[in-house]
Length: 72
Image: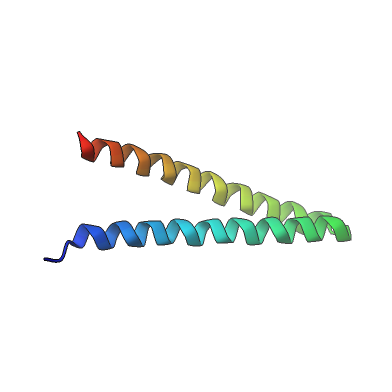
């Protein structure tokens, strides 16, 4: 028997992993740009990484709440 909800959960977690990867990429870009003295680029990359991090954090909290709500 195939459970379509299982595919949705796998895709959701895959999207979270992809989002974390982008956070790390923008963080590295910001650190390298800061070391090289490119203030504008470093600030932009850090701002993007921060926004993506907060989106991931909200999605993580929603995921945890939904996980516990299904158990009840």
